[in-house]
Length: 249
Image (cartoon, rainbow, N blue to C red; front, side, top):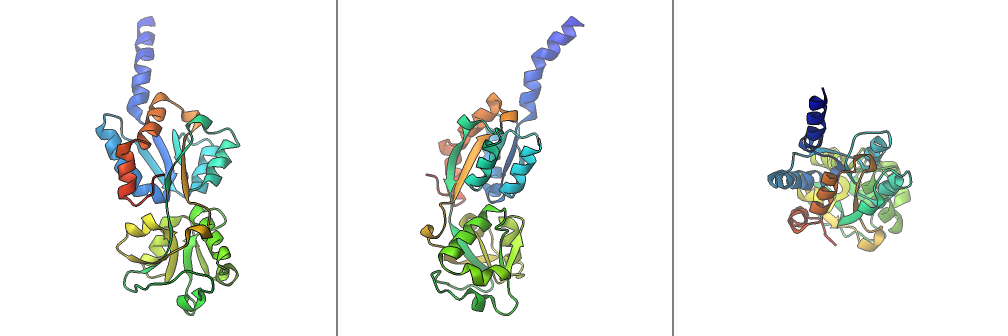
């Protein structure tokens, strides 16, 4: 019995290592994190378990006890949400990426739109048309979009015409399918789609800087999780993020 117990104790760390890490990341990181997961595996690590969605919904899942090792948010608000509840390892938190906010149209209807105060978005939407965007009530891209539209004096007129989505990829799909004539997404999401065209870029000063903080979740804090956060900041990972259109400060 003692021998079996000793063997079990010796194998436990190996089993935990072999199980791999669970990562929850903002939907806009989907393609980049899948690429990085492949590189991580090629370096000899177990395959990452990746889950994507709105930063708000992922943060709440972590709050409710979902078994996660690392969280990547599309804004500081939802990382702060977990930090104030003592759910992340504060010393592991790092902001690795930036992005741009863009206005998109279906690829079959490309146009160039100068985004500035006085822009008549209602006319561009047409009768009954809606602006697809992540729900500003909780989705980071929607929050950035609301800031920009308010700064440009367009929010009051356009708010009733929003098609509020659960995350940025859902907004992208609305425009891809022609269900919305316009949408607001990140530049990196527009870049991966053949179904949309970028009509214009929102001025950087019209919204808070788009920031992607990463952190180890305290309940899943392991040496392997710490190694992953270091890998995400390494030149190979940074090259992948850049190839997907992210800015790396």
